[in-house]
Image 1 (cartoon, rainbow, N blue to C red):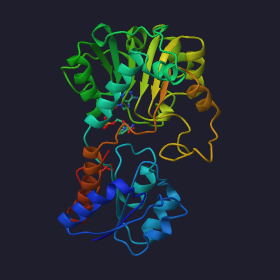
Image 2 (cartoon, rainbow, N blue to C red; image 1 turned 120 degrees about the vertical axis):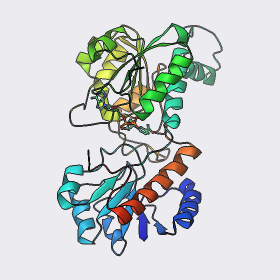
Image 3 (cartoon, helix red, strand yellow; image 1 turned 30 degrees about the horizontal axis):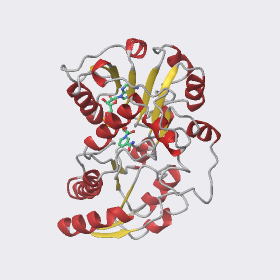
Image 4 (tube, rainbow, N blue to C red; image 1 turned 45 degrees about the vertical axis):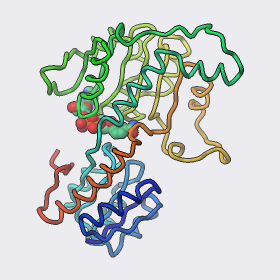
Length: 326
Ligand SMILES: NC(=O)c1ccc[n+]([C@@H]2O[C@H](COP(=O)([O-])OP(=O)(O)OC[C@H]3O[C@@H](n4cnc5c(N)ncnc54)[C@H](O)[C@@H]3O)[C@@H](O)[C@H]2O)c1
């Protein structure tokens, strides 16, 4: 099978070499992302693989179909970049990837601890030779009530990690899938938790789940963590919440309007994102570059999972991570 891998990064090469040999596949690596402008590169291939920052819209899907491509595989977990309805109509099967949920879960715990111990403020102070303890007093995890929104693969591990450190953890999900989890209503979670962390996918129903209204229901001094998808939080409302001290601190691995910024070196070009500039000036905000997934274990899993899904589609017409069944 001839596969074109769009948006292939340097760090994926080892794994593409390993798994294309293991599965006997002919994989060509392409640095450019899949988009309406680059989709023509897929002509002549049996399938393509891509990542969450690629645009897999109607234009792209129709072109792929016209090249005879009937199944495609994302190497990411999130699939809000793919027009699944259109894929279904065209009869194109689509899979996402399953990979180590510990990558994102550990990152979530780490950023929560950093916010609880004022590490972003400490680093900024020390950069300016200020070694005082002023305003740096922290809180211990065992005395926190943590609210987890979304209890899928990542949310479940996040719950275990926080519980293992003594936190009181409650959760909210549209589907209560695990009887060992203390589920509460969204309202209760918002109003009672010291730390709230997001682990739901972005859908048309939950865009701006965290907005002015939901922030107003939160406990004063709440800490917000987002390692899921940027558009779950309305960034201007979060900025307002930070300014008026309703929100004590925020750690954002993903943020609204990130697509032209994350995973890019903007040191020479700069970037156009006024709210981000304001957030980056704040001592109680931690911005990272959509990197919670980024571990050796997860990158290996992402490549292996995407390629094995394509083999399954080819051989059986279905795959373990087929999204079209949903
Ligand atoms: N920052 C990163 O690097 C990174 C990496 C991987 C995944 N992610 C994000 O994390 C999300 C979760 O990943 P996962 O593997 O745990 O997904 P998953 O599909 O296993 O679980 C998602 C859970 O969210 C629940 N959910 C859906 N809509 C909801 C809503 N409105 N309110 C509450 N719960 C809701 C679902 O019922 C499900 O239980 C992904 O969709 C992706 O957007 C981010």
